[in-house]
Length: 216
Image (cartoon, rainbow, N blue to C red):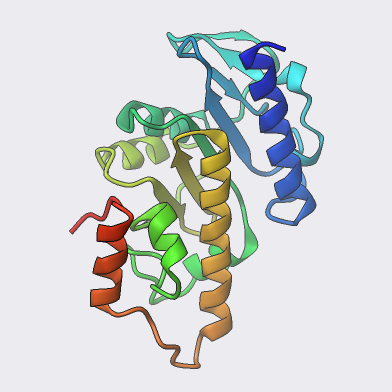
């Protein structure tokens, strides 16, 4: 089996896993990954994560031209923006996961550091998550907002919409976005209980030990 065939199967397997566990529903969410020749494989528009067909993924060449497969997700601007600004990105995932969306609705959500420091794992996998304002789905302005971060963030949260995470490969991106959702769920569970957050010194130790990108 070719490397691209393996990647197609992996994209669909991971997407179905997230769908089966309720991280996205219906035909929501989209996922993309770099191919060895510099092109992209992208989930098609209007397709459920639970039923993606490896043979029907949208295929782009290294010039960004659609060359095969079904029509791609309307959220291509956000995928393209991450690949353009983060050269290390090998995959991008966008979900409508419930708890992260709920946390984005809170009036006191931190725009610069969306997730509260409850565990080390979100820090390790995501760094600081930027909360972006609401945009219409598919709006090219989402891509411009991500480009405005100049590649300094691996993840953003689209307010009232859902998270977007870039990773070195498709498995890393999926693991990171699941950590984002888990941390948002913990934040909601602990709201009003005055939980013990990680201290500034503890956060600094995590950032240093695991070489986390952590914009000051």
